[in-house]
Amino acid sequence: MRRLPLFAMICLAAGGCSERQDQGNASVNEVAAPAAPQAEAPLPPVEPIPPGRPGGLPDDRTPVSEAPFTPTSAQGAANVVQTWFALLESGRGADAKSAWRDPATADAFVKSLGDPREVHAQIGSPGAIEGAAGSLFVEVPVQVYGRARDGSPFSKLGTATLRRVNDVPGSSPEQRSWHIDSIAVRPAG
Image 1 (cartoon, one colour):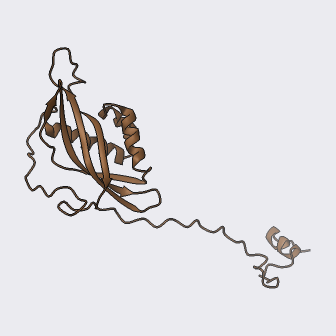
Image 2 (cartoon, one colour):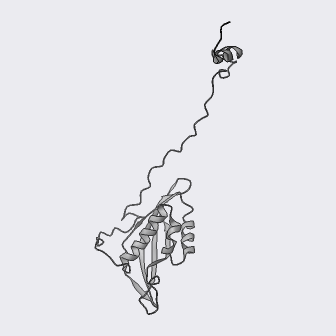
C-alpha cells in the first residue's frame, strides 16, 4: 500500500481539497481574514488666522529684537508664555506648571479650551512693563488655535498676564521671575 502525505490524508478525509461552494456561503476551505481596522484619515494641519485679519494677532511689523534679553525683561515674560505653550503642545503641560503663579489656574485654562485634541499658539510682542504695589505686570497677546476632540478647528484670541515681584529686599529669585498670572481668551473672529 502506498503511503500518502499527512496533508493529502486530511484532504481526503475532509472530502477533498478543491474549493466547494455551500449554497452561497464562502468556500469551505477558504479562511476569511479579519477585516483590517479602518484608519482614521489624518486631518490637515490647523493654520492660525494671519496677523492683521479679524481674529488674528495685531499686524505689528515692528521687529522684535533678536539680541539677548534678560529674564526679567518684557521679552523674558513673552518667552515664559511661549515655552509654556510649547510644552503644552508637546503633551508636557504638567511639566511646565511652574510657569504659572498658581498651577490650578493652568489646569482651569486648559479645561476652558475643552480638552482639545491638539493645541498651538502664536505669541505676540509683549506690552510695556507696569508696576503696582511691589509687583511688575506685563501683558502678552496670544492666539490659541488647534482642533477640538471631535476634530473641528478652533481659534481663540486673548492676552496672557504675567507677574513678578519687583526687586524688593527679602524677595527670592523665584518671586523675581515672571510667572503666568492668567490667560484670558475669547473665540477669534
